[in-house]
Length: 114
Image (cartoon, rainbow, N blue to C red; front, top):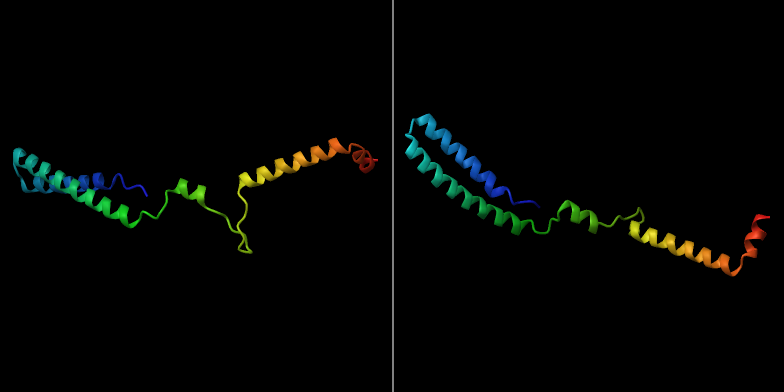
């Protein structure tokens, strides 16, 4: 789960709210900047704490890319279907077996084809 942006988003929302309230109440620029700085730092720390909590509670959820790699497809019978790599390996083994059989007994091909 991507949680890197959580502190930044929370900080920006808090800063926007602080700025909006300061502008609407007519606070001077110096006081507004002081409030904004304090607000940004507080909400950055708060966002960091929230990020840590989310990471600890959802650490068992994999990233989508990782999930595709480790996911096994099951068939209707409940058996686990072979992966594409296994299928490719089986095909290459079968073709090697057929090539080896032809090299050992090339006359069997002539019998089958005519």
